[in-house]
Image 1 (tube, rainbow, N blue to C red):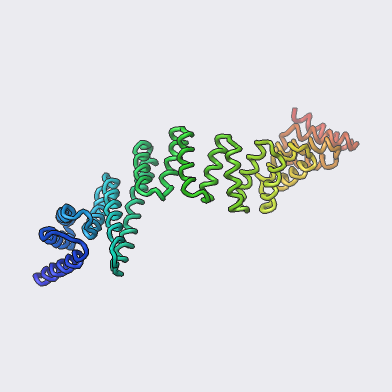
Image 2: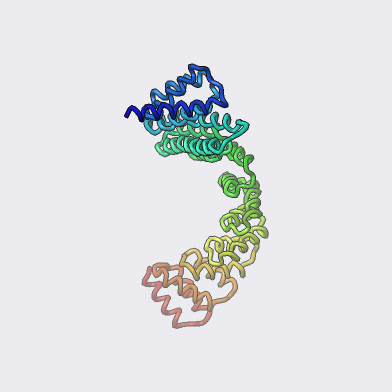
Length: 361
């Protein structure tokens, strides 16, 4: 046992000697460092923390002490859940400072590079733990606390957009402050104007605000980056439709149908575009495609009206019959069947559905 303690102390002295070869410490600080390392080896974090702080009082840029203070703070963040933000923030700052110091060394050893890589991982871990605490507070309805945490992690690492997106959501949904939400989104956009998810987020934001012109500009940027993105093409077509640019809306809607011919939403949109362009023949074809995939009272109502206008009573009977089979309680379907029978001079059918209609009254 005594031999192990002596070996540990010798190892600590060697580590201290190596560490101080590039960074100056006073004689007392060297003793404090040796004591801190020995306590850390024994996992006495309270004593180790006390002596590492003394080392940092002597030299605030002492990399090894900064790293160990980061390790201790990260550990304390796990031990004390109610103070996780405080300790993980401290860990992040200690690691950040130690990394900066070590990256400034003129001749870095492989062990230095390994230490830097390890600290970068731990620094990211500390940041993530704080961020997750913000998510937890948001989920629990503690909006003010969540915002405080998200603002803190955003300031800690300005390259990360996740906390800004969380803040945007809070301002948009919880606080109903679209102007602040927009401000944050544009701040994120300035960081990476080619981020497809962000461009879509901005487009949808303006779409929800009914600012179709602004929304369109972002959906158009996504189209350049991802020309086969079906959801984006549909959003772009929708904006153009609302702006009454029906020709452009049709082009993008058709791109969706080229990719996914059975897309019910795209077929429905195509039908409305055709109506706006006074192209009833096209609307009729889209309705047929829709009714080949689904039964819908409104679709049946629209198609029989178009078929009557086209004086195509044979097909009118076909679709009115399908409508009646789908919904035997629909008087309207029966009435259309009677009309079709009259116009095709089918007396037996007219009598059949006239009796059915009387039974429904």
